[in-house]
Length: 518
Image 1 (cartoon, rainbow, N blue to C red):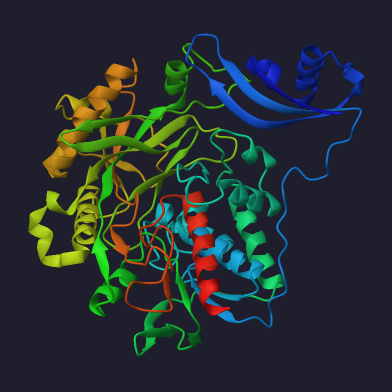
Image 2: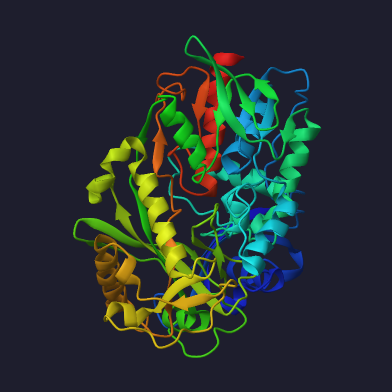
């Protein structure tokens, strides 16, 4: 017999399957020895009061063995003889587009400008050690995209766009822990995600698809307003309809589209800093206790949002037990991001604190037309590079010092491995960003006692929250509004924001393409 049971229990009662069996026995009256397994269907933490509870939806197997798999597998066909489709980019949008194409009987040919996910690690290490950024292999470019080395969080609000559950099940099928199916804020972790990505690659190859690394698309092959293929830096051309899933940092693609008069538009984004606290301080605030959070509670998270002068100010990509990382994708720029390993075990917590920005906020960039936001983004990253000493050292300031207009005398120890230098951020941050940041941080400090602290520091700059450009596409066919055969996809096209929403958009693009080209 199978029961489903909603319970609200203490963290130590939710610690493992054996303790959950005892809870299930007590709640259902079934003998403990008759309970063969307990599966967690949903899990969330209720930390609103001093006594913290775990909310669980359980599936209890009484005198019955559970199903072998905890996830729903997808069947992938042999498409070696299928019609080819070019997928540009091997981030979540591109990988999930490729896998969905295989389901639909089409043969994906994936072109990725960067290296495979394992080889990327060597180039990423050089950013910290030698302050050298490989413009083709970094935190943004390479197999897995920006998400591969920036935390692996799978939380999304875009549930109306497609099946989040399908995406999570595909991740599980390729090696992610089934706990992502039940957690309120699922997370794979930067230490686990590369293997999952490799397994996706192997599935694409096993099914007859192709993947070409270090192959950058440099131009399109267009005939009578139909995109027939692409030319690459390797000298090889590839032919077929194109799913363009290049990610939010492929500025050369945006410039090429603009130059070729392929319609794009400037898009609002969010810019700011990365805020780093001691994790123990965030734990004490969120869990209402001093000292250690204990062995049964995970590293605490937070989420803040407010409005300042008609612009949103909010926390973004919160990484409990994580690290601040250098995310530049080219020379003369400093960009920061955050990531967490699967155990979220570091002594720091970090999050982007960003301000909503629109092209009208900086009219002096209007000369760049549709690329205005991108050009402003580039300028801000160059200012961080200059104020960091023209290396990957990042400019930083203690949190309270920034809010109360003080120059920091020193900085706390940081997880940011290239190093920090003291910098009064509002000297070089535009006032329409710094003034809103300051007021937003004041507001967050008022709503969460202890959050506004000089134990925390602001590290500049956080600029890659989303694409600064939208590549226009038809709402029904998903094709570009004027160039047939081009399917702008995912975060880089301006239609997603994060791993799951990009993956969903990849699947939708594949489905739309199949309606036209099968």
